[in-house]
Image (cartoon, rainbow, N blue to C red; front, side, top):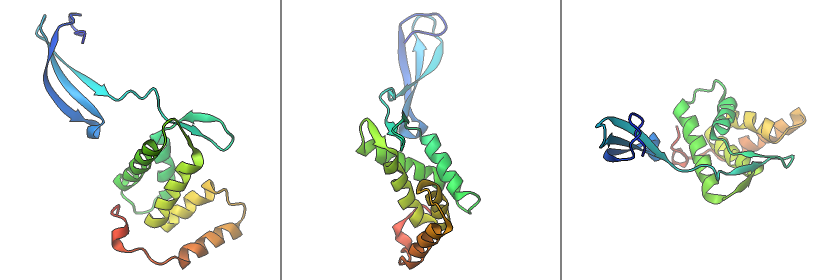
Amino acid sequence: MICPYCGADDDRVIDSRSSDGGRSIRRRRECNACCRRYTTYERIDTTARLTVVKRDQTRSPFDREKLLRSIQTAFGKRPVAEDVKRRLAEEVDEEIHRLFEREVDSREIGERVASRLRELDPVAYVRFASEYYRFENVGEIEREIAELRDRPPRSPHQSDLF
């Protein structure tokens, strides 16, 4: 590392810690030339990130924050903790990155979110599904709600998000 104070390329690491939930490493360094200390962060290179192929075949980089915003919108003002929403987004993000190397169809992402929302909160699921599945009329929404009602109730251990 180049020292930000004197420009020397001679330092030593005096402390390393996991940071950002294990997504990066924080290193405390000391310059051997000027004896000043500074902090650096080591993160995974995200230049080869996943690309999302949208319905119209356009492509854009996968963005977990966009995924989180869509989940937050689905929940609206439902009584669900923010960390539950974040964890849901993290789970979908990790699953997508584990299963797909370069490109993922937006339908894959939507299906994973929808299935989790269906189990967590039927109201949030219907909100998400109405946008995702592009319901054209009230009848389609009614059919989806009827299907939700006909499903057996979930057992308490099916999800630990609540």
